[in-house]
Amino acid sequence: MNQSAPTLLLQDVIIRHQAPGGAPGFELVIEEFSIARGEALALAGPSGAGKSTLLDLLALARRPSKARHFLLTPFAGKVIDLGAVWQAGDDNSLTAIRALHFGYILQTGGLLPFLSIRRNIALSQAVLGQSDPAHIEALAARLEISHLLERMPATLSVGQRQRVAIARALAHRPAILLADEPTASVHPALADTILALLIEQAREQDTALVLATHDPDRAARHGFTILPLRTEAGAAGAGRSWLNRAWAPA
Image (cartoon, rainbow, N blue to C red; front, side):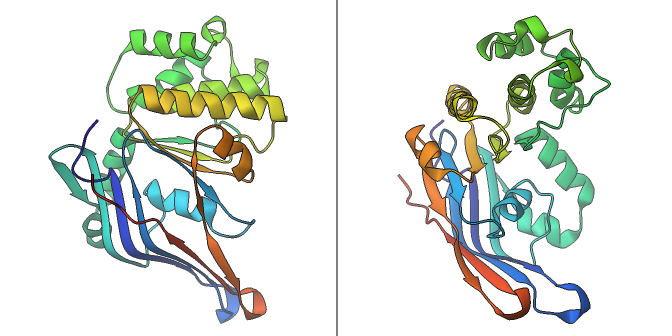
């Protein structure tokens, strides 16, 4: 998809965590961040650098402490000022935007144990009142899980559950796909498979993909652009991380 603006653009956005008892906390400073549809970025940094915090912010699950620009352009001609929506405290709009335009893959897949695999995948469509069984079948075939659709999550391996989670996150054709260290608990060969599937599916569906990873070298081999978080440790557990990825218009 050719766009005149990135799908997500953040400028001068800050998240602050206040430590208990008034002790110094943690601050994540996003000087600039941008991503367009079809791109794949991998957030890299040590544990505690704020990778998951950033993903939660991008997924509209965490409120920014400050935001000069926080803009979503899900398709050409439509710009949503997410900073203004946050400032207005419009939780209903945030929920609707999140459900419509975002897909999120958790470390452990996050499948509902009481739903079949088919119904787990269809959940992201059902939340929007959509029904596209053909797309679910196509995703399942592409991810080689068609034979698992009538089974329950407890009967699947870790790798199979991650494939189901990818399908569910893509079932409603989101503009943005977020993945929080989805390979952290799997062996290297399976990690390669999951990363390859993520980037392949994101490109096929023209989706912006942001991955938090503990293994940036592996992500780079699969075609992700690595985006490091710079960190600075402070006294009494305080700390700060910075992120800067400028947007260069085509």
